[in-house]
Structure formats: structure tokens, C-alpha cells
Image 1 (cartoon, each protein chain N blue to C red):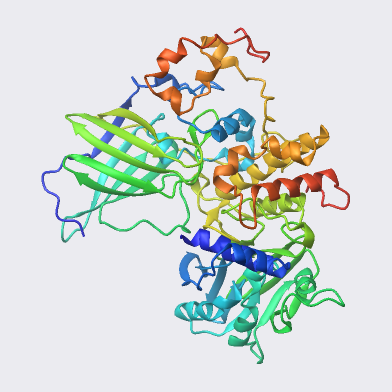
Image 2 (spheres, rainbow over the protein chains, first blue to last red):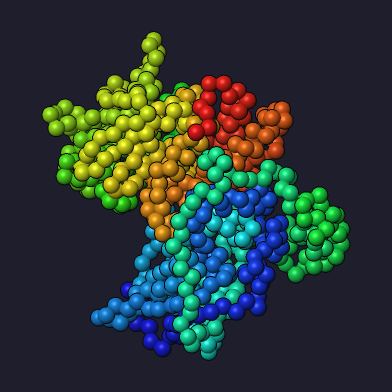
Length: 278
Length: 323
């Protein structure tokens, strides 16, 4: 059992994000083929290039929600509160209600171990936290497969995440370090800021019921583009004048030194896809 | 070495043994002592028992114990001890999802440790093809001792029994992982035991020598998706125990089904373009999944999976149709 925690920073409250970092990615969403800034593996890139957004119309995909590592970088507000043992007043867990898709998250603070490797995975995973001074450090495992970026770049169920929460007045800073031996060649590190709400945050309720959106499609079909056959290949790079190699992402592209190489790369050619030149 | 790795090595050795390859595999790996068996409550009356060999599901209740698959033969005593920690009721039923010895190795010991209500060893129920594979064609040596064979078989699409207050459904999936796969559904507990039609530790093992096929495998995965009903947010609801690996729900099976389908689609396109097997392998049609499911060693390799898909699609005659 953890020792009593006195005078630690209080994270309780309703928190709203500020989208001054990575706004195009987090709110309107990324464009197809935009893997910039992601230290992804070659396998992740192939998976994303093969991803057809129509896959989301499959019955079993329709009601899926965002997983823990993704959603705090996505469109969200959340409420955070403490669960305390009535006798000892020790914090057993921090609870979060994430308004996007009505998700709930528990961060266990009582020192319990993570589940065995054969235990089920969830969208939010299994989280344990501890205070390092005024910084709450959270370790999360047992995360479900979803995506790293909302354009088909996947994460795997082997993902894990370390987060650091810190508070400065009414601002909460959140840093996440996302590790995935399947789809990330190096850890993905990103940060967000949240502001304490003086009024109760809104809730995006999610009474999802799947339907057959495309009646003629065989039930067993899985929409995907064969390698090299995505009609959108190259569109993003061409539209923004970004060298194709840079748009493909990968660990090298995430370091400052890459800027020098970037200037030596050729401009992208006009692709043959439907969005070419727009 | 974690449980997954141990399981893969021992399961590979056991399956290879059933196919006459044991000596080669054993010379590649040091013999491993039998591991402890851990239990995990899945949902309702169903528990998962994890050790070396395939996953084992047990259903507990007032009438007794029902066991789905029996792991490797050397672990049988430990399996019985693990069951005894959960229940002191007699083992009444043993259900086999397929014939491989990492799923049937403990049949004899568990059957003898249990009993029917009217006496005698506990019933071993499986699809008819499991008995055929274990007893061996006439004139050949059986792959398993007679005391381990199923004592009760079915040859229809479905079979059901009612035990411990719930319906237990067996769905035969023809020509999937093998030709005798049963997907077992505990209807009240809302748990599926998938056998090796679904695993989380590797690509599917299409055992073509024993009737497996890629389309049958996909049909089996789609059957599981049809059975499972997710709870809120497409999470939980019906749980699925894979043949190897962790407990899953529909969303997890879905990602695996999508993966197998996408690889099938890619190889089908290459077959259509008349690429050779070597050219298909060189094109790396599984690249996006290799760091998760791929392997260059052991029994279920990436190359073996691609080859099985290629062979099936190159010669589709007599194979199951898309369902």
C-alpha cells in the first residue's frame, strides 16, 4: 500500500484541451498519406497505405472508440476524480471520464500489479500511477489495437505507454511516450495542454448501434488497397510540396538534423490519383 | 522465457511429433520442463487455464467440470491439479476443438480422472474428423493411444449439449485449421473457445496435410464474429479464448480476421498475375504484420503461412467457398 499522500498536486476537475499543438491532426484530422513526424516502421506505412476508410463501414468497426494513447491527443474533454479508501483516506485510484465516446479510465494508485499477459485488452488499457514529486507518472499496458494517426496508421496490441501529468495553476500538461514494437521504430513522444474548466464540460454520448451501411457487400469482405494501388498515393506530398520521403515518416524524419536533408530532396511529382493537383 | 514463447516451442514440438517431425524440432530446442498452470476467470462459469500447449477452457458448476482441450500429455497431472483447485466436482465432459496433441495430449489422463454419471471414464466429445485423425487410417499406426480418442463424435454442422445450467454449442468449421475444428460457445457465460482457428501468437497455421485451408480459416473467423456480441464501445461482451494467446473480444478477432483477409487478397492478386511462390514471398505480402505474428523459426513461420495461402489459391478445387 502506498504511503499517505499529503500536499500533492490536485488534478481533480473538468479539463478542456488547448489545440495549439498539432491542431490539423487533432481536430479536422490528418490527410491520407500524411505520416510526417511519426517514427513508424515500414510495416506501419504499408498498413496505412492499404487502409481504405470504407473499412469503418463494416459492422464490427462502426462502434469502435479511440484507445487511450490516441484519445488524449484527439478531440476530448475529461473529468478526473479520486477514489479514496474511506478509512485511510488513501487514494486507491484516479478515475477519468472521457467525454469522447463515453469512455472511462482508471489509474490505479494502490500499487497493484498489472494483469498477466493472457488477460483481455481494453481501449484504455490497464494503468497504474505513482507520484514523482509533483508529477504523476502513469504506466499503461493491455491496450487494444486501434491507430496512431486517424488515417490508418495502426498501433498494435503490444503497445504500452508512459505518461507524465503535471499542473501549473489552471493548466495541466500531459506528456505521453508511446512504445510499440510492431509499428513504431522508436517511441512516439507528444504533449498536450489542458485548461481547468470552471463550468461542467459537455458530454458526447455514444449510444452506438451498428447497421449494414453497404447492403451489397459480402459480409466477409474487408476493404483494402493492394500494395501500390491506393488512388490517394502521393496526393498529400504533392499538395503541400513535401518531399515524398518526408511524407512517409519514419524515425529519421523526426529529428532536427533531417531538416538539412529535407532541402536536398526532390519536390514531389504530380500523382495520378483523384485528388491530384487540387 | 515467457508463457507465449514456451507455449509456441512446446506446441510446435508436439504438433511436429504427430506429423513425424519431432526429432528434428527437439534437436533444435532444449527440452523444457513442464510449466505451472495458471487459471484466470474469464466470465460466467468459464475459466482459462494457461500453461504449455494450447489454451484450456473449463466450465464449472453443480453438475461437474467440462474441459475444452487438454493440453500436452506431460502436463496432464498438473492440469488435473489446477482443475481441482477450482472445483472438487467430477470431470464429466472433455471437448476437443481439434486433434493436435497440444490440445488432446491430456485426454486419456483427464478422462480417467473423471467419470460419466453412470460410471466409466469421462466422455470425450469432438467432431468425427478428430477421431479419424487420432485413430489413423486403416493400415497405419495411430497418432494417439486409443484411450485418448474421442468416445463421442458428431458429423453434423452443429452439436449441442446442456451442462451446468447452460447450453454448450459446438460449431464444426470444415477445412479451417484442420478438417475437424469445433468452435465451442458457452451460451450463458457468453464465452467462445475458438481452438486454433484463432490464435493471438502467430499467423494461422493452415494444416493442409490434415484438411486445413485458407478460406475455411476465414470462414471460421467470420463465424466467431457472427457469434460474438460486443458490449458498449465495442469492448467486452462475448469473450473469446484463442487456441494460443490471450483472452480476446470481438474487436480483437476482427483485427485478426482483417489481417488474414488482407493477406489473402494480396496473395490472390499475385496468383492472378501468375507470380511464382518465390516471387510472392519476395514481395512480402505480410510485411505490415510480421513484427506481430511473423516468425522465421518454429512451426508456424511466415514463409509457411504464405506458402499455404499460395497453394490454396493456386489450386482452389475442392476448397471451401466464401460463406
